[in-house]
Image (tube, rainbow, N blue to C red; front, side):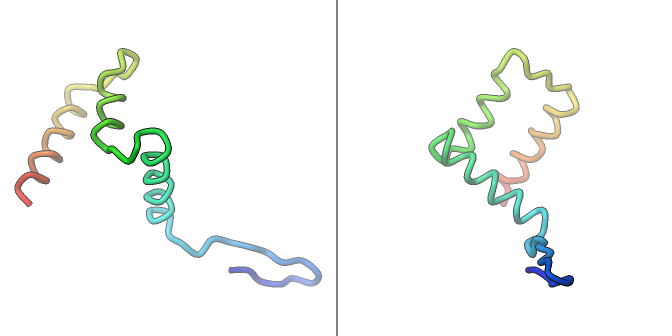
Length: 70
């Protein structure tokens, strides 16, 4: 969308931040991981420079457990 102020057009996004983030993330998955969410997550979890806390790992486990139940 845009609005006109004098001779200028002011442009701003219409989509919500979460929608835009999802689109960008899906494009990243397609570009770098052949669309595989599993490969993307494994890449970061298995990287020795990734420092996940015990709490973060537990949160990820809970997310996976909930997904399995649905």
